[in-house]
Length: 195
Ligand SMILES: Nc1ncnc2c1[nH]c(=O)n2[C@H]1C[C@H](O)[C@@H](COP(=O)(O)OP(=O)(O)OP(=O)(O)O)O1
Picture 1 (cartoon, helix red, strand yellow):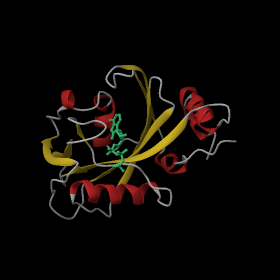
Picture 2 (tube, protein in one colour):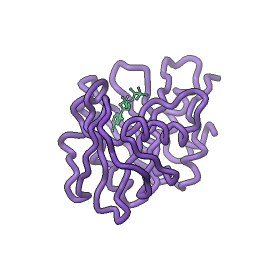
Picture 3 (cartoon, helix red, strand yellow):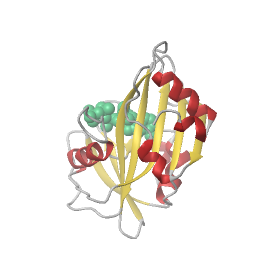
Picture 4 (tube, helix red, strand yellow):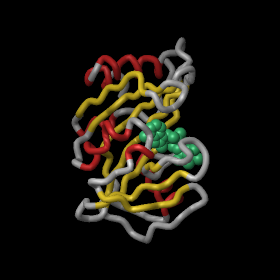
């Protein structure tokens, strides 16, 4: 639903306008990100990225949402492809917008968490899964935005955030985090029609 982000915060409203405006070069690349916890939430499963964008960093499991998929369907598929785990209990907890200097593509990560899953984590061509104690998250080996929002995902506090990176993919020049009603997370569109 276009216009909803502007109601949350003008900084998010600007982004929504840019994504919907015919005159703006900005486009969205919708992705998913899933964090899997042990049932007592004492540990989280992260994957060491072995290739591609974000190589060498620990991350949740996810990737591009395909055109025919919902965000939830994409999150389930990517989780299984990258970790070998399945989960029927993914809960949407956030939306993260990532902008990179001189890049018109805005990555949107639809963030899910679950502490119920099936299977045993397996190493894939792309990711090497590893459990981390919740009090010992390897933030220095993760994307620099993660330390700003990770605890909200752990504590189940729904949020929408926007991060602007320099082209070095490390320096965050601007960031903005808003706690939201969980229902809003499902109302924000995955694709923004140019109008
Ligand atoms: N925390 C954080 N900050 C900034 N950018 C990201 C993150 N986590 C992320 O996953 N990302 C970015 C990096 C990627 O563009 C996407 C997801 O990456 P990847 O798993 O390689 O997926 P894609 O290559 O885009 O798609 P698939 O090929 O896996 O479908 O989000």
